[in-house]
Length: 451
Image (cartoon, rainbow, N blue to C red; front, side, top):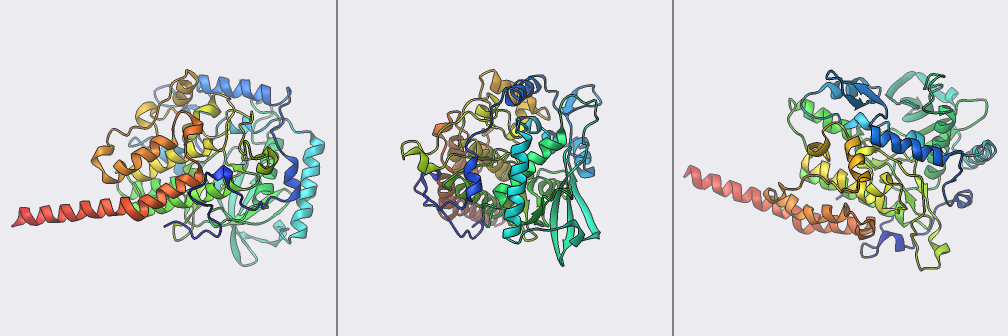
């Protein structure tokens, strides 16, 4: 189950010890660690921590006068936020990432990167222009505080385009200085990664253009199924507000596909940590195959060969507060050194959502995800509720996996390759058999009752 991947690491070997040939081009070798400038990251760290503690990041006031995180600027998300039946899963999408990922980068270095990427695009025949697109067939898919994603026709093919919004914040807004530059930095980071990777479980780059005389644009394959979060919301709406979870085969297929993508990213010679893994960043094809997207705040790590084999996946001090609150690992919230295991923590919460239909931490914090961060910062380790696991054969098998994957000690969490191996084993040997046995038992019971 899952996508047919062209490269699958050895499932018995942790991802960070894989020797997958690096597909990272030479220009990526330059970035090894985040820039830790006093004028950038330290300010960001203090600000984002305050936002976590105060719960004031992108807030709106509800009818009871309480602050709740602001939603995406989408009509269906607005409707979701008003839905009394279940919390708004997407309400915290605009998080400290817009600050935490905006560490200072010298304008000269950024311009040099833009020119380098533009040259690479031309050499690989990936340059596109807005003039080639049929604007009459453009449809806006999503608008955030910084970007606008649309579907448009390009040379007879429907594609997705990402453009930076101009002046997303009022000039007098002091929360974010030069938001356009921060957005451009994320776009350049995402583009440099997409140009360097190729995997069937990662959204494919179609082209881009960073010319000085045009607005920057990144073009990727169009995922007609939308994202996993909205897919589940629409299904819940169709079921008159009843809790929805994907079918067992579909939940397992999605989980395995995401694990395959993570095993690939973490197994590169320069491992890539996504840092913002969540249902909104899992996109679906027309036939409901899942792929990872949004590498704007991802981190390219030190090449594994540079470690001399002693510590191929060190724990650097990277930007804290990066990601989305509900799916953020505790060590990221606390601004502690972290590794690719932060993605595993986020992945475990996604698996929990897919197999239970329950939003992670809903019973703990409702629609106030900042409470999770406050708890982490206070030294506590809340986790989603698994008290019901004994009822379901599937959850009885998944429970040990989830508890390992969201272990409070990051080093004890399984690698992406180990996650993939365990899910594949459950899929082929355990979960489906357990459910089928339960169905057969129920059928036999009904027959006895009706006799």
